[in-house]
Image 1 (cartoon, rainbow, N blue to C red):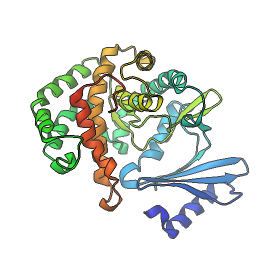
Image 2: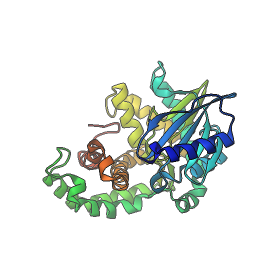
Image 3: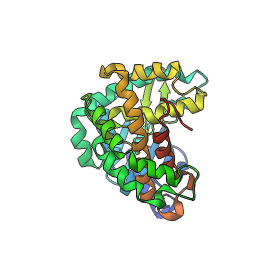
Length: 318
């Protein structure tokens, strides 16, 4: 990976030192094919450097700037960005995942604030698309699923227990149903905007009563309610909540309140969002060199299609 190349590391550290006065060794605690993060000690405290793969997540620094312009209290505080896909950020506090308190109470406060950020950025959706943020608007889902159904390698038919050939055939028969679901969802009139697409307790940081959402590399321009697909099933899994339980419905409604939308819209988006998330995994896998692909990541594509077919309540993750 490029992040481990000594010349790249020298170039990155030189840029970091041009932005802040470094007071100790720069550590590199996270290295992934899609990004790397460095911990940088300074006289004003620890700051963080992140580099995103230009061909996959290179839009993230500029996107973060746009989000900060709309709601500076909701995202990371930027010190500097660079066209190479680099950004230097102030420390955002403790990860929500590492706190001892019940995560549900935090999410009741986080989700409405996140919704307000989505609403604030809605007028800039076209600008985000021009920036390179992936286009995952619902209207395109049926055609993309139809193409995916014919891709046996991506579906891992015969190589994974997630999806059988019979289920693939059922998906093909139910494409008109999917088209109807998308049209019904869009009939609620909620416009596309930024959608984090990986919003869970590892991406939210807490500092006193302030919540900041980080790591926007997986985000897309989509129906905002598709956010709930990942958030609610991750929460149900980690907090051991029953899918469709009263707690999950309470969180759904807290999120919907700034939009003034009915629960039916979110329930529809949960189903179409399951497919959108599978398509996002497909995009990521195709952009990852074969030698760096995680087999479990590849199974996320048929997994999402199976969940769509089974049509479980919100929070369904297995």
